Length: 237
Image (cartoon, rainbow, N blue to C red; front, top):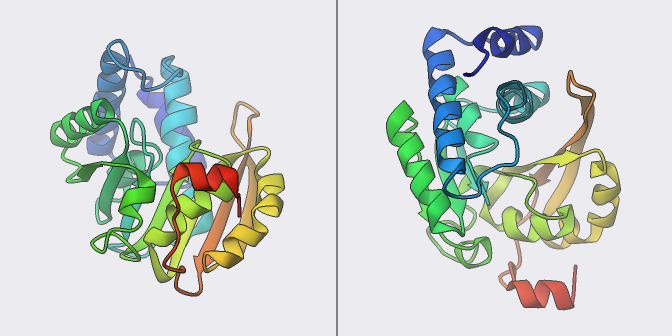
């Protein structure tokens, strides 16, 4: 059973307003996550207090720390898995337009169930980022692309930056090695049309270190990117 008092206190501590309706949606989300996790691999984190802090709070808080989310922003969550970070964010910010992209259809089935159960109104898309990044219906169409715990930042930029319109942002939620990854990804960010605007180092209440990376799209991504996984591995940017 989700500890709603803990979740509320986490959000209150970050001055993020959540009401009873939002808390009820988080409770349903946690229940579905644990139930589905017994059938398909969604997460290694299933303890109620860890779901509160490491999944829900740590999906929402970084975006408030950044402060760059405009009203009605169109977001694509690349390699979204069980819906982190964008589904918790959508619960708190219902004005956002959300597309969830994942390569595993079982996860998409979970996300469709989640979306219907709590009224997320999210578009759930089954596919690979390197294919949809070259699709005219998705390429450079979003205000924000985001991803959490998918790949190293250099590869992640090639997956995600092509989805972002010029003037938009790629928002990457990374672990404590995030600043080192930024340094290693500088060339890729430049080639793909991005520029690091800001990085935030922060610590969760339990002491876990995190880095939030904000990359602004300053020019159009060259047509040959993203490449397929084999090309990316053979010749990293």
